[in-house]
Length: 132
Length: 485
Image (tube, rainbow over all chains, first blue to last red; front, side, top):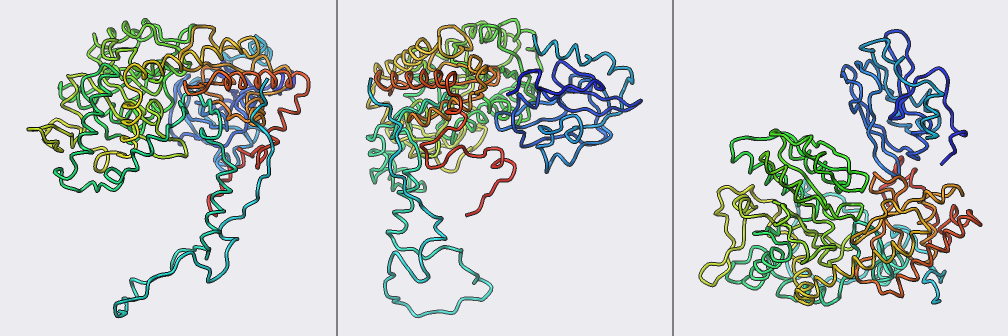
């Protein structure tokens, strides 16, 4: 596992306490798990995602991610309806490890409240929670 | 100090069976045909399976060599936490292999099966006595099957009260299969967290327990190897709302003949005969997960049940409220015979002593290693203790590296990354069957590994070096499994 300063945390996404990132674009947002989360999980071998059209409240479990160590739940950092899922992860789960903020995205949602991502942490706040 | 068991002897290569042998080679000869040949309908004929042509010695050497690459409880200490890999005494095998048991046909008339039926009848009573419950079924084939049986009992019980329920409480220190067993039965698992002491707090149970909740599934001792000290209080809370308490008996090896599960509030309890009662498991054979219940749940037990009528043992289906049949015939009977043999050879006092020694051994390891590895919860442990790799992280080695290195020292790795509540968990369960000398060697190995982690971490990250196969690519195996020969 890496030190916090060896991990990558972009400025242009927001972060949740359950180690999800959200990148909002108007009414919609893409989200996935952070570099810290993938590093803790280790090599990811399977990602289970919901169907397009399903709606989830903030904090609800929307899928699971399985690594060689364990199976973990994926939690909604904000509320919304699924408009797209990253089907490519079925064949290439390693993208979550390699490029968690781009090819490794999990779902795209229509935000119930377009301002909700603003309530999440920015990079500095998230990194300081990781450093404890 | 004695030598560590790990060494590198001569390891023989062995190809796949399909790469061995030669067309026309054969391991047996068929007797001469003594009936006229008869043409078979072409629709019934087809290509045979793709088996290689091998002689007997080809096959014997093949499997002997494969077995030599392996590690088993017969070859060394196997401290796989949560799995109770105790030694399986050979007398159990001997009894189960007796032709009267081994060759008995399950469809034989009960008049001709009195021996095995009596054994099953008596075994149920032994298990009831050991656990403090009232009745038992031997049908479930393993632990998770026992859990499913338990959930079906919960379901049928609530159904009989005319008030089906939809949820079940499952703590984060329960056995990993619990939520799945509950979900398979149609219940929605409601997770609750253990407290800072690693056990359940009654108020956390009270906060989620309601009249839509069928009950709670508690593993006691839990997967941190800690006794759920508040179990009586928790059972009262659940019972007060009409719920039931399921006890996952996977960790019964800590409390055989010590904890009266009925008295502490458990309504349904499964046992793993293949763990606690010393029958081979893992790759070594099928299991058995008998379920014990209190009186009020007895009418719902699976059928057929062995009953005693006028001095004769019979199989009876006459239990109208039963959840039905869970396993063809009478369960994994060979396992039942081995467990019966184990119980009879130890007797009541020694079963209790086995549990006491299992706890003593784990406590000894915990105390010996608590300065070397970070102890997840520094409290009195039961039959297993849980450490983590926190102190070794500075050297860039992980739990996985530590336990892979342990293989070079000649020990089977402990359970790792479980329970999930402890990041980087190393869960050690020595069982009562290891001697102090062997446990001391195990402790010295782990201390030596911790030293290597600080001085030469490469020894860990490259381990194992002495096994026939080095570090396996677990990721590739999971992402791109190759399941053919």
